[in-house]
Length: 101
Image (cartoon, rainbow, N blue to C red):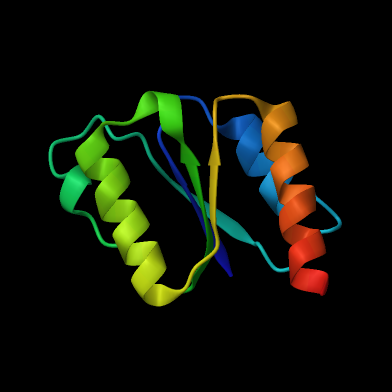
């Protein structure tokens, strides 16, 4: 299963957290959209994606709406965060707890 990170330029720590966190089994690959490329606002979330992480302070409103609407239609978990690995870890822990219920 894939994870999609939207926003930010350098996401290696986030990518490692998603792919190597023992509580998040199944994320074997992570795709990244910076939001800086022409056409990013119209991209489709790839098939096989199981989680979308949006770095809110690094993307424009149109891209945010596009990703949010696609994730909602496909019933994908969506995690919003600033560019802070600590915040992302906390939200992932909450996501794992919700999935466990």
